[in-house]
Image (cartoon, rainbow, N blue to C red; front, side):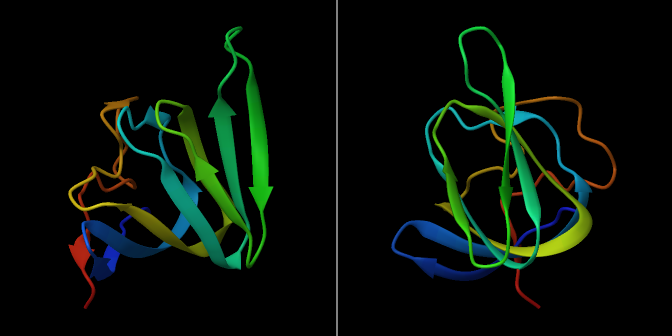
Length: 115
């Protein structure tokens, strides 16, 4: 499931945490970068960032950080599950502003309150 919770707000940014498993959708954020920090487990981030449409995968383990630049299509995935922290401008949709069809296990949200 991909359903982020807002742990805090710092200025105009949400600090989001999520337990994730499986694949997210290919998506892009046209106007903002996306920050990922792996708290537990392993996260794979597939990227389409070449002019030739080529793909590459960045693999992040616990404690590792990656920033997806604005406009870059990406698809996070965690085959075994992970806990992650994300930093995004408040109101940013979890599936970006360009995305593939959203499956049931992916929550298209601007974040839920931490309960």
